[in-house]
Length: 371
Image 1 (tube, rainbow, N blue to C red):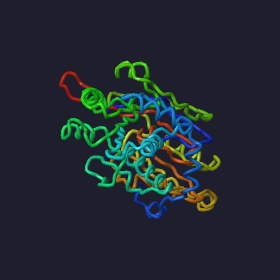
Image 2 (image 1 turned 90 degrees about the vertical axis):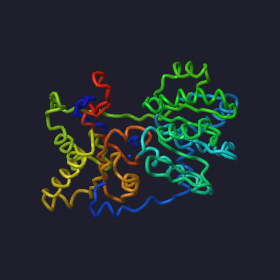
Image 3 (image 1 turned 90 degrees about the horizontal axis):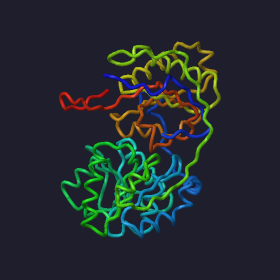
Image 4 (image 1 turned 120 degrees about the vertical axis):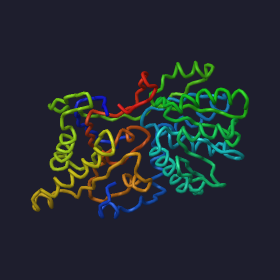
């Protein structure tokens, strides 16, 4: 396995939630479910920048078959636009389809939108999701979230996607093989179905190129919300070998995390590592280091909940990162799946180990390998 260096080990501190998403200890199992607060949901929805562009987005979609939407980070496009489409009547006779490149984001966004609809007095069953080996849809589902691979499979079963009135390809900049296949398939389907609409959304998409690809379709720009971030780089050098980094960056990430916990003000911590094995090792190391603290020192600190997050975790365990933890502090140790589409309230510190695993093609044997 090879790892690509992104940056040196860095600590990023921000005064606002970090975008972004379990250990089997008893304390994590005791995490309470999120409390449904209708007023809080409505207040949060009203504060999102995308709300100011609701009518403009709907008018543009109504008058065009294809629309590209560039919504900056924190604009609320992922959760709000599907609800705008529902309110506009796009689910009257057919469904609204929304794709995400990652399973974690698919489930998290679907449940968030369901909670917001329930807080608005609508049925939570109007929202469903489908990921590999897990289908949570029913006859009453009006908004269907799915991974892009699931939509490709549906194209094989229903070449015209006749059950959908509009398809929203979210996070299109990720450019997975399934997303690129969908671009071509949908070009063909749209030519045969004049009643089908396509909405391509992203925060960092090259709008000009995608607009040109889709016959110079209109582009809607939605501003986001940005907050001041202080970045501190570790002085420890990361040494790379043939099989990946040789230095103990996991230990450095754990050390930095515990320094924050012991010396910095309240705020949850997000730690980026490369995979499940590293995440589990880091979580175990954090627990071990906490146990080694003197009782007096440990009792003077807020309670620390260590929560791993990676794709192989069950949906219930993944959702624990969103649960309220009272006066405790959460440290979420995750892969880069938490970089997009997810928002974890209360995160003020980010520790980035500086490496990520990616699939790269090996032309000599025509295989894609993890590197």
